[in-house]
Amino acid sequence: MTSSPGGFPFTVNGQLPAVKSPVLIVMLSGWIDASGAASVAMDYLVESSNAEVIVEFDPDTFMDFRARRPVMKLREGVNTSIVWNTPQIKMGTDAAGTQFFMLTGPEPDSSWNLFARSVAGIAEQLGVVKTIGMGAYPFAAPHTRAVGLTATSPDPDIIERLTLSKNSLDVPAGIEPVIEHSLHKIGIAAMCIWAQVPHYVASMAYPAATAALLEAVSMETGLTLDGSRFSREAGVQRERLDQLVSNNPEHMDMLHKLEQSYDEALSETGSMPVTSMDIPTVDEIAAEVEQFLRDQQPGG
Image (cartoon, rainbow, N blue to C red; front, side, top):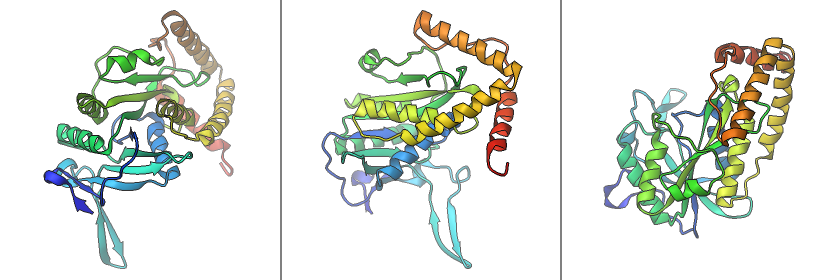
């Protein structure tokens, strides 16, 4: 590992690679990620692309060790090493042989502006032409509909050309939109794609959202990404959820109302609805869904 030039808070593993017109995929854990859909998508990208670390950010600068303690590797009483949980940039190769970069790891606990500027500076040196973040949030959507996607970007032109849902609201921000602005300022296209996860399954895995994110990233970047495993898992989960709902008249009524509200809002405005109808609470539905899925497992 070699230190970065100019004393910036990151370390470069050897020399930065030369890649033609690469893209950077961003997913830092710690903020909203319903069902862990975006984290699962990033794990898939890292594993399937045989990713290697090329940049590691300084944990002393960005991480709160009392909130995210490092791991001591103890072997027969010997403290062999300390593993620091810190953001990294990795390089991988897709199924078609195209190289790309990934920003992964935990969301920084402090110095967000410094972190965002550092990411932008590295991206500029790497020749990155586009960055795409991934996220997922719980939403009043039925599991019987395709996963809705929304997008954010500081560039109005990017948002204008997208067919994804566009919203206007004020919400607490994670680090990703801060990175978007730093990249936008130096002329690198930056956006984030968000999957809408049915609120009643947001506390468990929802592979349909992961598949939707991977498909959207593939379409936006041209990368060859195979999300078929998640699509198959989504089909199995859909059957189980349908069976659960069909066994409970209250849930059947809830689902029909949710479908009607969702479909009407889409047909009238083209945007995703925000429903206020009286339905069972998220915790009530989630608890029953989780119990049902456990019962379906062998030996359950």
